[in-house]
Length: 239
Ligand SMILES: [Fe+2]
Image 1 (cartoon, rainbow, N blue to C red):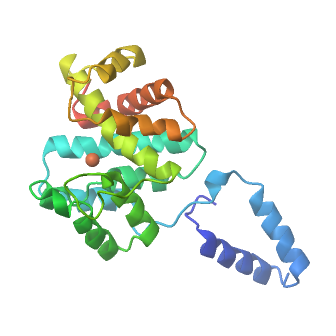
Image 2: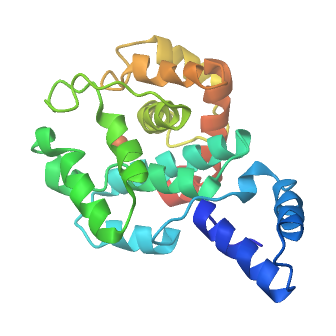
């Protein structure tokens, strides 16, 4: 039951169960449906065309700076933690974090293509429109990207992705300032850095504050994000 399912696969499973048990009448099918629905919402997982390992291979197949790869892994770790907190699909949320800058190698010197090139790349891999829109949403509001300049994020997952990928910058910079140490970093210290706008000045505080449009407070988000990065510290060059 750990396999990925989406609404359509869910229906296929129902039909399969009904067929195997010869339970083709609607009463029996309803019983199967109600038995499945008592499971946690996290059980209803979105379909993804590639695994995490394959997504990492896609990223590694392009020239990447270590700092960029660290940023993808940190964004993923925070998104996974958020998904767990919200009792939703960790694989899907994690994949958004991991691939949100999939086109960065090609767009870092040409920002106006950021998110647009990503659409082509993600489509080619087989990601659906919704996934692609969620990825593109982290660039909404950027002056440099005319077609996204006026767009607004409008869902919990979109606010979470934007806040998560942005806070990685402050946490990583703060850890480097502390001699790469994240293991004893706390939310109070991070909050001070957050409030000091000259520190990691390119990390947009307003975007991080979008986390408050989900059900988390800023302080809870600081704590959760630090915890997420502590768990992968060796992978991102921290201690
Ligand atoms: Fe990013």
